[in-house]
Length: 300
Image (cartoon, rainbow, N blue to C red; front, side):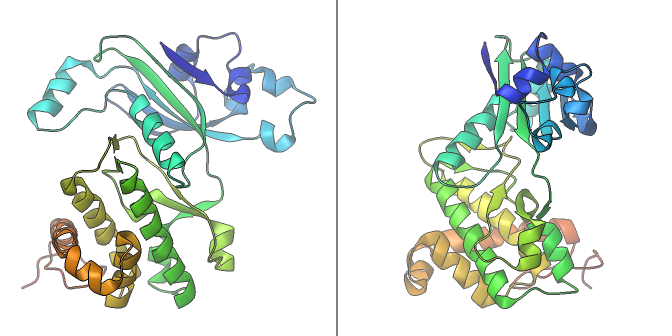
């Protein structure tokens, strides 16, 4: 069995089996299927938790803290075999995300703050596990920001800063042996206040690493899928060729001329991957750079 509870979570679940507490935790449910639940909760959702009776020791902001919980109660052999038959590696538990968070964190990428996790059971079909992270309150995703910028664009300086930071994060993640597998702008979060101030030094947080893979080196195939997915999601920003070149320079760590030479195959494969997703999503032939389509439908 593996178990870690930060002090605040240990207080909220005090006197209870942590796995049962995770399974029964109430809150705002975001997903519930195949033995998995994802929800947001706070101390008020923990019933008679000691935190609800504390008059001292914790600041009000601490006692009002918000958390995200991902609970896995076992998906059964049927679901595991179904995934394997479709050449998909099944998501069995929460610990893969724990390892991915630790890996990108060690690489200097801002990500989720872990509050607690646990895993028990040898049978992968019945294994129980959970992950609790701090809720990134007051943030907006870069996907949402891109939607807003379609009508009210931000400054060129701020847009370039976001491109540079996203490229730095992609490079650091891949260099650390992690590929995301859901690498879209919707999984990059920035504080709303930093957006309003157009803070070029703002932190950007990478989330939803539950499908990530961690190994010594990311295979080219998975670099292509990550960068292609990210490229597809930039359609909302209306990027220019210069914007894409800036990303390439930072991601490869090379001068543009060298990147376009040495990394041409990787970059073209990533472009084709992004265009393939675009074609499937919008049912339209893409143009370079990708642009958001208001009305999906095949071009005639």
